[in-house]
Image (cartoon, rainbow, N blue to C red):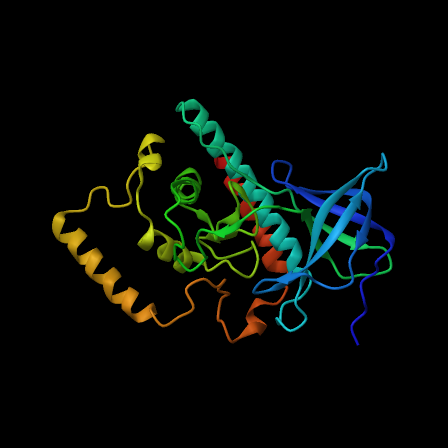
Length: 285
């Protein structure tokens, strides 16, 4: 039988990933956590919580737990937290670029940490509670749910800024406060179970629509340099692929080798490879 979550105040250790130092910062905290989840996603259960700060004030928060039936190890939460903090570092660069171009667009990813409740070893994800109308703009399989130009331009911005080494996708949240992104990398290492590697990047580029914001930021079109014949071949191939994918669930988070969940379990070597990849990316910037 699963160990029930506590509902009283419980001390915990909070780990937050710092992208620039490439380290996990450790802090003490206290959580008040509801016993039953109020929502769920494809991989995680979501619980209401309150974080009690050192001055005694409280912050509404949510705690996310890997589903026991998902086939994923709870330690995957370290990947998920790292992914969101890296996504936010790109959001800050996006905001700077918009400011320099005289554009009003701004966005952010919620700060997320891994927490371990004392006496309860399973690592959990903690982030502020987001109120408002929740919208999913895209998934990690290259599908777009909305025509929101900020979400689309941001994802393409991360691809260009990283030197085409990664793309931040699966954009969702309230307004321009986002959460639960996925990151595809050219090597397919690190960043959690949703990293589909080069195939994920290809799927994103296949459906990306170069919008006005992309142009205002000076981002090159993915079709730049293609002849009319090459463009026609590209569109024909996209139509064929769209028809083949039409029967699939349009808004799911894919994991590599879906149906073979053993391939997505926690592996320290993939985690370390992800850290090395982050260091490489930030040294390039």
